[in-house]
Amino acid sequence: MLSFLELFRFRRRDSPIHRMDPRVKALYLLVMSTLSIVYYSLAAMLTLFASTIPLIAVAGVHREWIRSLRGAAFLASMIIFVNMIAGYLSEGFILTMDTISYALSMGLRFLTFTSVFSIFFLTTTPEDLSLALEKLGVPYDYCFAFTSAIRFVPDLALEIQTVIDAQRSRGLELEKGNLIRRIRNYIPILIPVFIRSFTRSIELAEAMEARGYGASEKRTSIYELCMKRSDYMIALLLLCILALSILIRLLIGWY
Image (cartoon, rainbow, N blue to C red; front, top):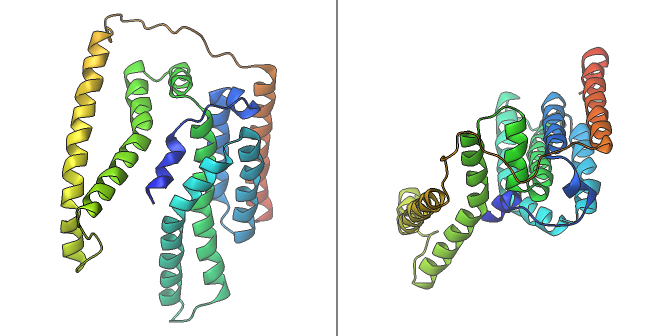
């Protein structure tokens, strides 16, 4: 399941999606997330999810995308299961097709979010993300903190998996016992991970201090983000799709 966090790791490719301005990709993320919330039918979720597949193929990150979906499948299954149980209880202990359809659409909504965020983070460098946030008026300190957290999420997942494998090789049985026992079994996993996280934080702070972080009140960059004509056209297209979809939802009532 930790492979789900691989969606936060940037993959360097030479593709139109990678060359796109990060602000446009952020707008795409916002539009798709909004549509995933506004619409909730199974057909709508299938359409939104399917629309991300060509972009994944163009970006050339399909292997990483599949890996992140594989990790998210467990959480999606839990969402489907919980919604089916809730619908079963609310319908008077009857499992209807509407309940099943709604539960599947909720699970597919989560996979759509995963797919959209994969497109954004797998094709956007932390540096470009930080510059985009600065262009939007976010203070640099917050930009740096956010991008640093995003950068270290996959590394933290890898360290957790390494510690789990090491402890299992020493005979630790994580799935043995009742719920309380299983929670206690993870203590030998959490302690090394916390220690390594604190060590990494100290190393990062020392590196920042050695490079003079905060010495200058106005920080400059070696290059500036500049939107091309194609970026403006894509942004306009996304806004039109968003406006049209909301109008259809409000006026026609499709969901």
